[in-house]
Length: 189
Image 1 (cartoon, rainbow, N blue to C red):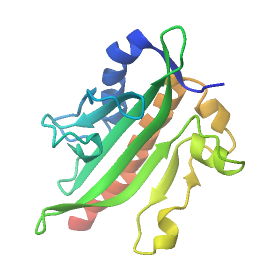
Image 2: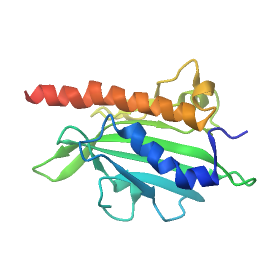
Image 3: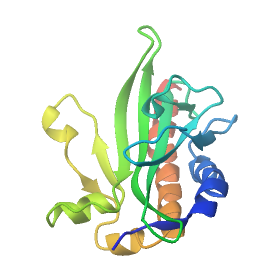
């Protein structure tokens, strides 16, 4: 059974705008753009965000500006065809925050919240990975691959529908805006 299913017309028509709305708590005053990455990726379609100009063909390199000048964000979704009735299922949704080094002109990943709704790993990892979970980038390599579930106890509800997962990602974007972006803003003041 696949989780987070969407009709092909809704995926192509409504989903990019829904992605833009869910990311508004993080986005700068210029907002965020979202489009189809145009390439077939892993047998599916990718919708990814940017801030008006796309940096290269690799959607994982696209960024949009947050409310803090040194924090840039990337969000993408990978959808795969279910094989019937023009339905697609979400396989990956990734929201990553990067800290920009203005001297070296590089981005360093701070953290990533992502979900793999159709993950089939053995339990308990399957439950940790299906719903949104946090990865913290840290100098200690041990922590880089830790999964901190944000929907522990109700992961099945979190991945039962597009509206529910969208609502959760909107809350995650709001949380990251307050707990990460605002903290960086306040640290400068």
